[in-house]
View 1: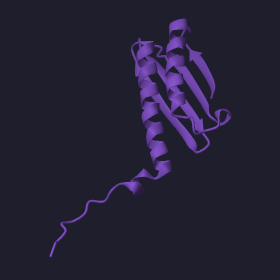
View 2: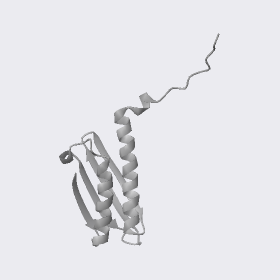
View 3: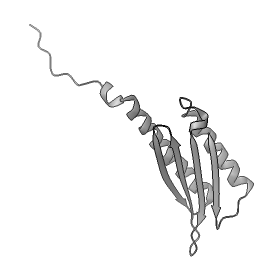
View 4: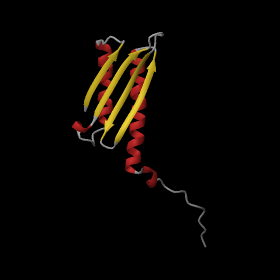
Amino acid sequence: MKTSVTYKNVVSNPHLEKEFERRRAKLERLLKSYAPDLVQLHGAFQQHARRQEFQLALTLTLPTGTLHTIGEGTATRGCVKNAFDELKGQLKKHQSRLRKDYEWKRKRGGALEFI
C-alpha cells in the first residue's frame, strides 16, 4: 500500500506517526486481495485555527472504488482512531457489496404444511 500524509497547522511527532502506522497495518490486513501497488492511502492532518480540535481526512483509493472519511477529535490519537474506524467500516461494507453478500442471505421460509 502506498501511503502519504500531509500536515497543516499540526506538528508531526513520533507518537502520532506510530499510531497512524499501527492503524494502517491493521487496515492492510483487510486489503490482502488487492495488489499492493494499486492501493493508495492519503491522510491529511489539520488543526482548526480558532479551537483546539484536530481533523484527519483519509482517502483510500482501490481498483474497485474510492473511500473517503473524516475523523475529528480534541486529541490527535482520538481523531486517528475515529477516522480509521470509520474507514474500516466503509471498507467492510464495500467488500461485502463486491461479494454480493446481499444475494446470499438466507430467505425466510413460510410455514410448511405436512400432510
